[in-house]
Image (cartoon, rainbow, N blue to C red; front, side, top):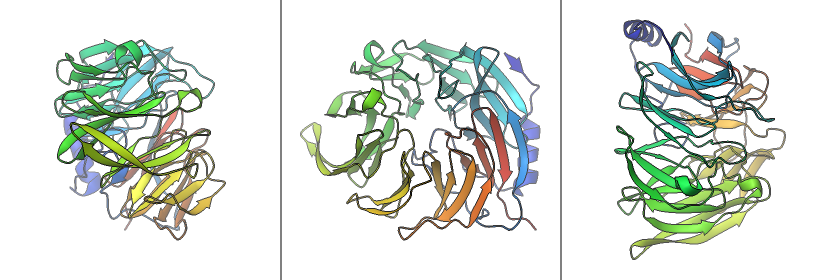
Length: 401
């Protein structure tokens, strides 16, 4: 492991200088603190006649990992020297604080390296490597706190990130490793393990229904719901997709649970209800209106926004009715902030537009990367973080002047 000198003071000082003393909410895991791709950032640039200012960029090697950001430290992965590497960077300057080779390289025709996104919580950071090594490390130093090994990887490698739920670190190992498995987040001791389904590619997803906490496992050929504390399965449905690619994040809202997969599968919305100590789910609609191979949808004011395998689309949440689509914008990734969609296309173009069921009309369009861009961008303290397979970029989205 390589470790730089303690840079805590420099990080804080740079953050104060850059943000004028304002501290934004951390983005501690895949799709943000609420697992929905929605940021609470305000006051960022939504249109400009000037080129965006590049603050820093860095080559770190191939990976599909997005970013976790806490205490002005950015966590992500890259691959070089025949190793998957776990990185901690200064989010303000791009400086490498520490770098930990943690797993043998993974190579694939669609892109090499780690697929999962780090998760940071209470001074610890978690990562699941493409080959199944699960690490918990100290966020400041990178020193290993505990580790596990899964041995039932899917065709295109382990991709789901670790979910922190209370005192638990929950992951999907698959088959004998557990469809879902929960560890004590501090010690790594196994708390519960549920099911022997093949692993999917999605991150375990938490939600609250009737005052109870549940976890959704979007697995290789099924979707399940378990009690968060015990892992007891309370609902399941068959969900079969070509090559067992269920990767997009499930979504819960106001008693409804949504799933979508690519290829020929489509999407469905279920209405949940209590049924004794189990749950039941009535299908509200099912359609191929959305075909998300890996991109997760954003829900805003009753409408789903996503860039699936066919188009950028807006679909009414409760009916599945398509409101509009942009056919040439496929396989992009989205987040939402201040009522605006922030889209990174798979070819590296940034587009910002007001989220509206009427149309998608970008007020900002600029190329920020090239090559394959399948990792979800992050907006944090007025800075946009994005990547292709090898290169990270940080742009200033604070108004100038």
